[in-house]
Length: 396
Ligand SMILES: Cc1cc2nc3c(=O)[nH]c(=O)nc-3n(C[C@H](O)[C@H](O)[C@H](O)COP(=O)(O)O)c2cc1C
Image 1 (cartoon, rainbow, N blue to C red):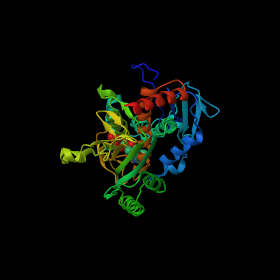
Image 2 (image 1 turned 90 degrees about the vertical axis):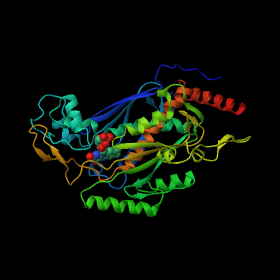
Image 3 (image 1 turned 180 degrees about the vertical axis):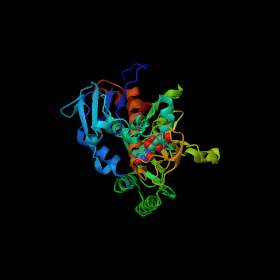
Image 4 (image 1 turned 180 degrees about the horizontal axis):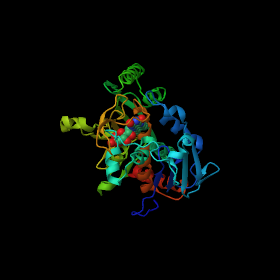
């Protein structure tokens, strides 16, 4: 028997808050079942991965992110009550005056009036009526993704309990592209984990680092592509019945919401558009031991918005970092005079970090879909529901 859950309530959700140079980033998560094992170390390992990767800027050296679990976890297990997470900004002492919520911020202090092309600076200032674009960039910055990785770690932990694993790797930096062919997932994962570039090919990882060096020397930046895979997913997550329940749409939205991501593919993605139908669809087979299966996975594990039991494959394309040492042309927001865009401390390439963030947001969406189908108040209840469903599938 499967316990039914209410359809109109988002079972798992969170909101985050915090400015890039504010006191801290925070999130409140609601909907994780009680009894799920979790430690701060587990979350911190993911936060450290987000801060790694060749090509990051100076800020990563200043700050080692660590999470504080403020509520909802006791003795290493979730309580089923809301979970509050906090990541303090270690550089706060240097920004306290500038970012103080109290009156008395020194006038003109660290004002940003030269909007940076490729950032939310100009559009955000026009929208909210800010004169100082620091008010925009402080929240629009990818610093916010640290708390998303922390929240995503909780989802990842839940999925692990269900035998579902999420991992990612880099497919491209600028012109250097990796073809992983049909490399076994375990090898792919281990090689990516051993690489500073999260790249499964050590020779190409070296060439990626060289191209980042060239970009740095030229005062330029580089983007690239990452791929996220989710293994052990049962058929039936998401739904074909309503547009906003489709798992592929939800994953695409989540990955696209990461700063600087400009393209998302599921499975074969854009490549499918150039092929004949016979070269794209994954034919269906049956084996009494395995059940239904496919010999290809061009759909990336999702058909009609529903997981089909194959590995979920999602890719994200990241544009080059928009802040360039070789400053871009802009216009002063106040004087309207042509100026060089403001230059904040900046990464040259952050695709490996974006990949870790991609893993976090994908884990979150899969966990949401999982709890929508199997949700219960305790981990035990969720597992019971899940086992019941798997047993039913065996009877099909
Ligand atoms: C992990 C990560 C690190 C980033 N670091 C920088 C950076 O150091 N400098 C910068 O200008 N943009 C950086 N970006 C990209 C900007 O945040 C992003 O381009 C900007 O907020 C505008 O959003 P959009 O590109 O999605 O339109 C980073 C993005 C990510 C995901």
